[in-house]
Image (cartoon, rainbow, N blue to C red; front, side, top):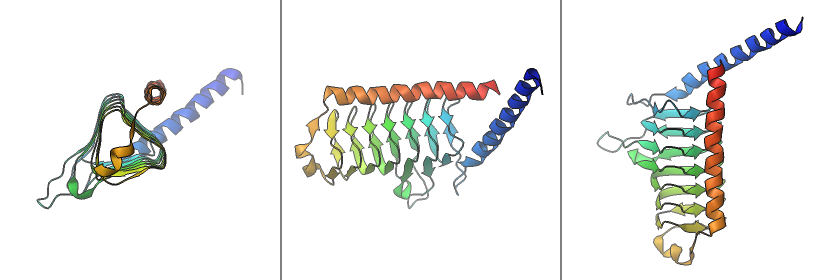
Length: 213
């Protein structure tokens, strides 16, 4: 096989792989039992292995990584549910789970990073420019803008103020536990912004790959 035919063959194989992933991706975008379908901005990138189910709204330039699960399917006693909303330019990294109890609202602001294998379980509101570290859990809480929750932490049943820093392995279960929380050091805030920017660049790269085929 000459070089030209070899290149053509490789491109053909790659195209079939991309089409296969595209079909898989469509199968991962699912209705909930009430018939709600996700609404995903055309500029967002959702990995083919991620599952997006039900009343989910994903904003502009959002990155959703491999094996993430975003599922809005439980209802309130009256049969209604609030949406799960992912704000523009945010990134939901590999293995993250976002769900909500009894149809409660989950709001994630803009330019926010939810790192690998974290869980955000509603009702929950996470502000903009927030960083949530690896394996952390947020439940029934509010997290203010530019707050940082470091790795392997649990935050539930409280209001975490803006610009606050939760150290790794913290266990916070009420507002009273916040008395010892310090404000975000500038270098931690800078790190959070760099993570968000890196994932925004990934969105552009992956979308460009999709467009090549």
